[in-house]
Image 1 (spheres, rainbow, N blue to C red):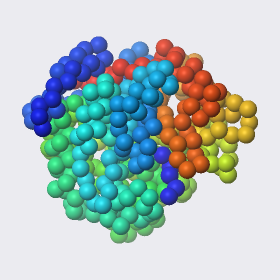
Image 2: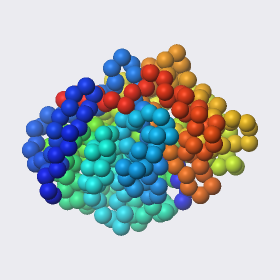
Image 3: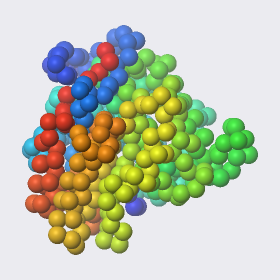
Length: 363
């Protein structure tokens, strides 16, 4: 989202067609990878950031249930932030428990920011410091806790890395320099992000956290539009990443130009679809827009977006998941119920049988 500015607990979890009993105090590491796969029969996962408020981590059963009631459909995953406020890196055990108990998959956004309102650059976290191992002790503990929670997790590091509204963007980590870090043929800023992400995944692998599906998340389009801020330049590689994710936002303020979902996606699709050499599955991880002055403007925006992605649309079957950013802040209301017309459009579109809430895992 582009923003300005134990006791042993056994839970019966049903994933797909099978059920299993999971302990949240399970210290056994089986070493077997458990990765999210695309849904069977070219179905599309329906998911959301379900109105968790600022700072995007207020997970409650009530908020998840409220979104599903509004949407009229269940969601595959619950998307939330794991903020590193004040330099503290800590695995979000309680949020993971709550989401899993509710019946959805936890999707964790690792956000290396010292505070929610911090403007770049960040006073604590830089990509070079992560690469140099300054936070390894905390990251190792994070990985151990992720492993020991005993449930499948989805995760990403550095949301919308190609957007300069976040401090992990290349602009604040070397920008257009090639001479200071790494390969002299590559831009330092993107290369540092790539290597910081690799470093984090290497730690989780070493600690046996094989229950994590890793996403790489970019914004469509990048900002700024320049050679040192390309999507592929940030990419850790197919050996590290399981899914490609992107944000597709329309106008978020009255001052922004109104653009259709299709025009935004079309303008970035070639770059997005060629990030992975092996064709990793693609997910829309964030999407939304505000109401505008046109009658049914947002409602039509939602309808046309879903029609593009579902069976018969231009982007079917290339996009494997659709996760809405259901949120309202300042003068920006992206919620699906920002108007009766928008709510009806979302409900109607997402009720199509092509969408599913049942995840399929490799294990």
